[in-house]
Length: 370
Image 1: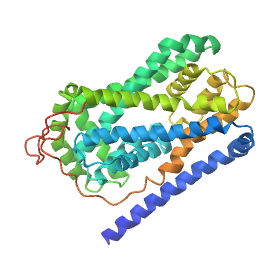
Image 2: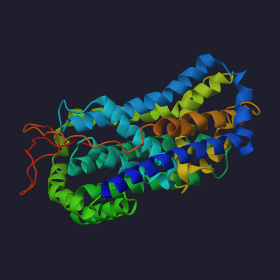
Image 3: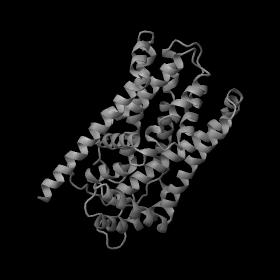
Image 4: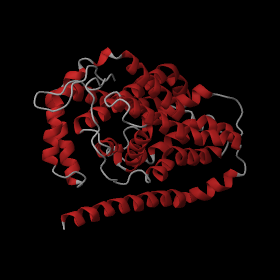
């Protein structure tokens, strides 16, 4: 009976994801005749520029998967494929897209990693390390854009800068919280307890207390290894460099749409900066996909570049490419699959370091570098 109940719950969960996905897509299509506006604009688009714009978002997903591939393989060399990393990427992309503040993205990636055979302690470390790298790079990227381009946008749009600064501070605060997770045992312990409590309430984890204890058993190893994270500079440069490239690719989508609508000139850096500001402003919106704020800030900022009414058409196309495509593609990866066999951690793995006393894991010599 318990087995049947578990199977029923998995089916209900997967069907719910499917219904949610289709519901959000339908909402986008019917709201303000968005689909009709997009279809009407296709006849005037330059597909030489439009196709690369669509491919850019696939490039973002591929780079994200490469980051997970590198981090996990630093713990389990040669055992973790890019295909598995791509699934974890799309799980995170999907649940970030459909939940307020993207709150379910990282927890569901942890679940996905665990079902792929990554141990709980390593999975937590990988997800936190990846998110810390992303948020740190995004904050530095945003700071650079503010220093270089804020005067231009402020001269064009009065009252723009305070909104961007609030978003930047929200990003910087998340970096601080992640840093505390990495160095503070008390903070980390309480966060792990909350995390497993949340997963148990969502009925995504069985025996949460038992799993929480297993993670606590590896917590000492995780925290100790953060002290040695500066030893692997090669991995560090790779991760930060790839994340910077990922953000630049994502922020380049509006420029390709700009050219697809036959607009003159090539203000590439200005448009990348404008997209970075859109991301900053939308950072503190508590709705799935930062709904409303993303669209509104895009219209205000990119109205400086697009001619006439094409800015609304571009906004809808940008929104579909960068947000709704994630839901369409991600729903095929977000289903709860079968749990795979545990990955074997080799004695000389360049991963998260030695297990604490009482944990039966072979020691590793090098730590992950954020």
